[in-house]
Length: 284
Image 1 (cartoon, rainbow, N blue to C red):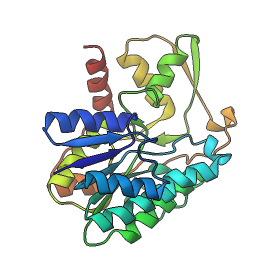
Image 2: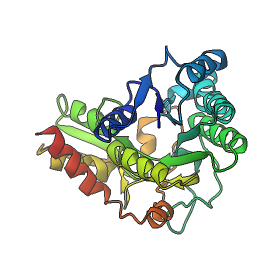
Image 3: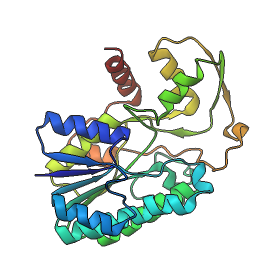
Image 4: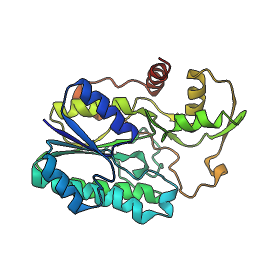
């Protein structure tokens, strides 16, 4: 069974490449230049050439603030991209796996974690582009031919994550100011790949939340990063609006993994355990 990974350099792609190599599964990972998800003709040639059984869409426009000014680009990748992949997956009989975000929610839920039954209402253009991509792809993919996972605060091999940012800040700053009123779930890319692979293996389809267990504020997340890496810095909790960022974030967007946990008979670890495991792997 052949896997086609769309998006070659991201942290989720790296996790899939390592996992599929370990499982001795045939796969190919293509860059944006080789497989631009917004370019239907180019994608069709890719499907015709490789005829994949499974398509893992790891491509995304994920610069939340830039999306406020570059919405057309975000929409092309996060909305039109999944639509094109869904169309071609249906045509070529491939099973599509796509990833979305907790930012499809507005953060106003007052009781419990967000579940798959909660109604999306994105606050920013990035979240809107991801929500449109969800709807377009889910409406196209029929006969149990798609998995859509919402995830959050992804970290792994690479530089596009909060761990990398924090470790960069401490090189120049003795005191860090971190938002204490943004709450979600740090989630390891390796875990996302493992659960995705198991879901495919068990024939699961549909929409699920795929995150670590527990949740944290950005402030708690930063403190945990410094602790696990043995770095001593003063961290001050501040309101998110201190930073006057272009995109509005949900204050609480933590999602529950109960549905996928139960379905696959898993016990996805707490985010702090996942962070410790990741840090140990980086330190040899």
